[in-house]
Image 1 (cartoon, rainbow, N blue to C red):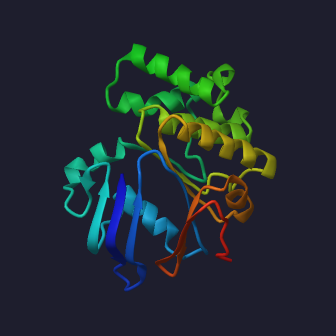
Image 2: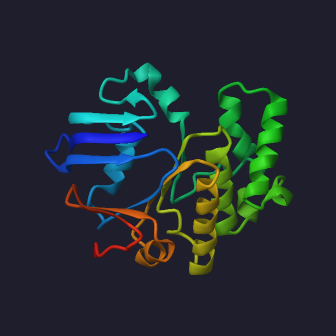
Length: 227
């Protein structure tokens, strides 16, 4: 579960990015976070990953109380979530298999377990036959799917996708969103940060709209008018 209670985030330059945010995202939900550029979406995701620390209020993510979380425990928090960035952030000098396996190697997982889980998640994203390819040999959509496999391989409870369709064409955007729906059906909490109104309207999930750091709308199944 994710729970924001009266969360305010002000940067050192005086900019208040979030103001008294109160919201709860339950385990297994699929949620869109939408709003104008600069509305506070990116700050919200940075707080979830503890890249930034809240200035006031309370934030709980998977039983971690983030306002009190010591730095040494931040890696344990991050292991409970998988993050997919707009620019994919794949290692160009590693194969698809190596890119996905990397997250498990970092925590010292056994080679047999790594091999089984990597192939399992490459199967889920329909890339098992590409395991020996380099990222440069893949299309943008295929690279995005590698990023999703890497995000899932450590079996996180939460998947955060930051503008996951920003660098791919409309047809591939639908495929990526369908993949996220499938991931959600694996009992994963899925949070999609996006500005693409058509996709939000099409999938009719919960939509949280942020404007100038304030949650101005939180509804199920309806699109949004944050433009």
